[in-house]
Image 1 (cartoon, rainbow, N blue to C red):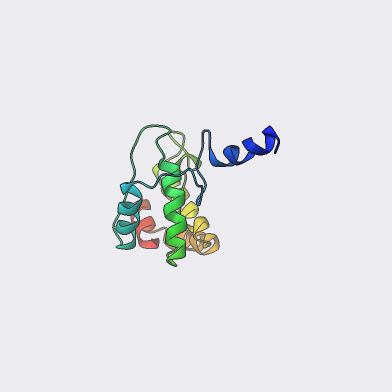
Image 2: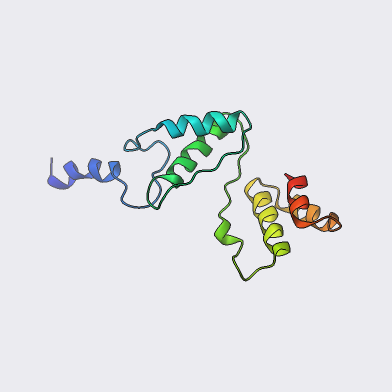
Length: 130
C-alpha cells in the first residue's frame, strides 16, 4: 500500500469548510438533529440559529434528506437569493413565494398564484400559498 492509498480514506472522511454531505462518516449526530426532525415531522415551525461554521447547513441537509425518506416535501430557501435592502416588501415576498414554489417543484403554479392573488397584501399572499 502506498502512502497515497493510505491517506485517501482520510481525505474522504474529513470535510474542511462547507456542508458535510448526508451519510458522511465524519458527521456527528447531535440532539439538535433528532429534535429538529421530530418537530418538523410534527408540523412545528422551526428555525436554527447559530454562529458561522457551527453546522447549520449540515443539519439542514441531513434533516431534509431524512424528511424526504419519510415522504415529506421540503423547501430549503436561501434568503440571500431574494434580495436585501434594494427590493420592496412586495418584491421580497413575491421572491420568497417563487423560490418556495421552485424548491417544491411548483414554480409555474407559484407564478400563477402570484398573478391571481394581487388583491391581497404580500404577506397574506405568501401564507395563503403555503
